[in-house]
Image (tube, rainbow, N blue to C red):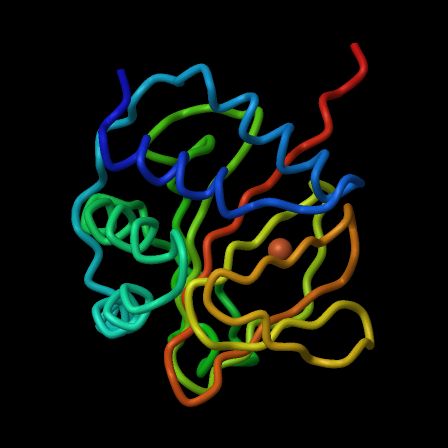
Length: 196
Ligand SMILES: [Fe+2]
């Protein structure tokens, strides 16, 4: 049995992450099929005192006025947030970024539900902060919970809006940035199973 908030979050994300048939839909299906079987629960870490987390409350408030399933997802993440293992990427060259963002695995090797087949996490960014270009082998689905902009490679910035989706194919370079309000997004990583 899963924690109710966690199950509500998974169900909400599954109903939000609807892509037309193709690579993105396959990645989402991989994640949500795997999550039909719960993994073991991890003990929550001590509460984080990162100052950037003060933006959580306004971000949840904004998302709770969003369309469709967004308020349900926001309420579930808000309930889980105090117990999440928040961390930030060290970036000595960009202290405003280092101090202006927080990530947490909700499900994954370090999440509240421990598993290594898929990862679901959350990112929070203070107004005006840009998450630098990065890339990773797993395909990634973002469910966007706030205003904010996304970019792939050298493409144009675009604004998916609350409830919008972003699909990052494996290893594509991507970035996101907050505008005048905090950026909140849920991400789902779908590692390709190793052929063994
Ligand atoms: Fe990413």
